[in-house]
Image (cartoon, rainbow, N blue to C red; front, side, top):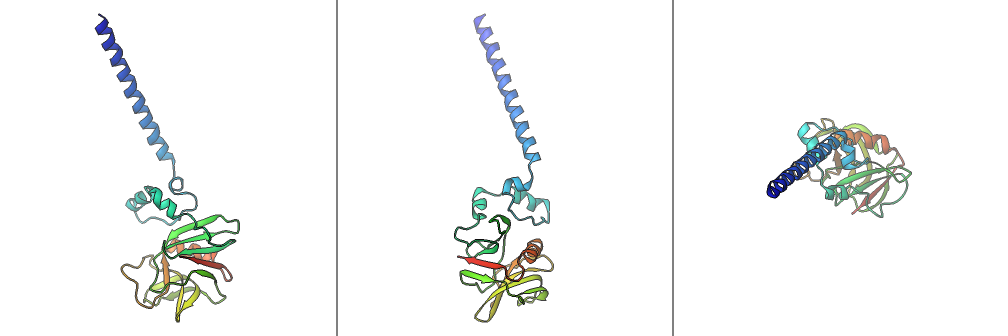
Length: 197
C-alpha cells in the first residue's frame, strides 16, 4: 500500500512539474510577442525598413557581439557629430546630448579617409547625382578629399548596396536609402564628422 501511495505522489509531482514548464513556456512566448525589434537591438539601432520577413527575422536575432559592435566607439569626440568607423563599417549619428539617434552599417568605397575630425562644408551636400561608380545616388554628404577623390556618405536611389570590391577611385560610403535620408537630415553644413580607425 505504501508503494502505491509513493507512486501516486511521484506521478502527481511529475504532472505538476510538466504544468509549470508549460506555463513558463507560454509566458516566454507571450513576452517575445510583446517585444518590438527595438527591445532586442536598443533604441539607437537603425530604423531602416526590412525588405522581407526573413531579413526582419535576422535583425531580431542579432547576436550580443553585434550589439557590442554597435556601441559608440570611445574617444569619438563630443557634441553633435557623425562618427564613422573604418574598421567596423558603421556610422553613428550623435546628438548634442551625447545620445546616439541612429546607427547603421555602411559599405565603404575604395578610398578611405584618414582618422580625424572633419566638417561638412557649405557646398558638401547634393540631393541627387550620379556617383563615381555610375550609380545614381541621393542624399550625398561630402566631408573630405583623399588624393583628389571626394569622400562622403550617400545612398543609391534604388536602395541597393554595392556588391563585391568597390570600383577603384571611389570614395562613396554607401548606406541603405532610409539611413541616407537620416544622414541628410542630420548632417547639415558645419556638422562635425569624426572618423575613427
